[in-house]
Image (cartoon, rainbow, N blue to C red; front, side):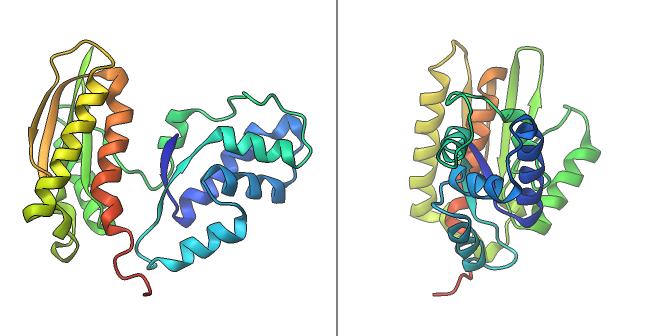
Length: 221
């Protein structure tokens, strides 16, 4: 499953990808919309819209897209598809307009500064990856987050959060032999020596941990 911020731009881009993927099956636009909502964990498109409207305009809800559920919903709607069809590319889903993290070359300070300002404007954690031939370095920093929205990375809450991040790191790092090193706290830190294959899973997981406590900030009670 791929975490996706449910911004208007991301949902429009996701629907465009889905339309291309379903072109051969001649799936109706309304049915694609319903299947996407189901793939994002909602029973209906109306439920998805209700959720996106329940959070502040500046804050997008983070959901996980399960293309298996997307296919199941289309099957329920009467389309003849392979239940195990892989219609979406995970890397493509991570390249939607409102990204959660990006790759940056080791010495590309221009791109690093640009991405930091983007994160600051969007009030999201500053997460990026420096890839090398076999290994990568994953960096995170909550300095891009409005201080009013960072209580979850401070004090006892921050201590509990970083323990969870470290446990996630350990679980992911066990999948491939490496000498990956976790350094830092919930506010700022890095994972060095991370196998390239494990980058998306860990970057997605860390963004979710650092962002989810923020997503209901300012929402109606």
